[in-house]
Image (cartoon, rainbow, N blue to C red; front, side, top):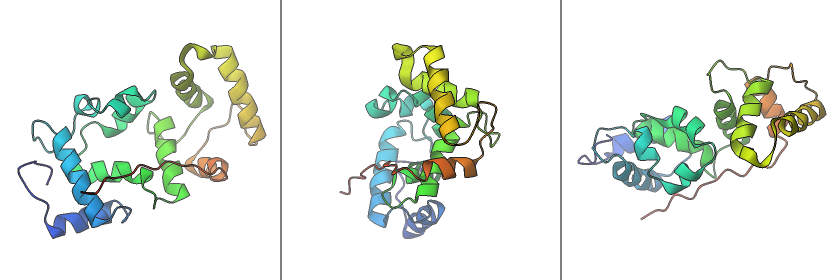
Length: 175
């Protein structure tokens, strides 16, 4: 699985479905496999950072470097699991867990004021000064009951973001 010259078996499809918490239909998994094979230009069985950057929407994303850390070297099964947070069937906690991983760049299970500030810097670029970012972030954290010294865990993110109607969906074209 993952080599463009190979075909997905029914077993492979079911295994990928299980690995991605059944958030994609079998037809969607087949479509994702075709896309994976297109991206895996050298048929290595995984997608490199350069191959991910060949997707214009990915390359233009202000968080692309953070996402690359999460996506570089994914095989097909993990590629589908990575995309599962964007499924219309994904639950709010599954979506928030993905967002948490984007913020937790050192993978220590904690997000600090500085971690959030880095993401904010990536998102706003030169449109805001560091002082403005810190001021906005301090106010947002304060409104949520946290301070700039707080360390946020996944449960904190779920508590804060779970109240929002996050819409992180991608349509998987089915051939």
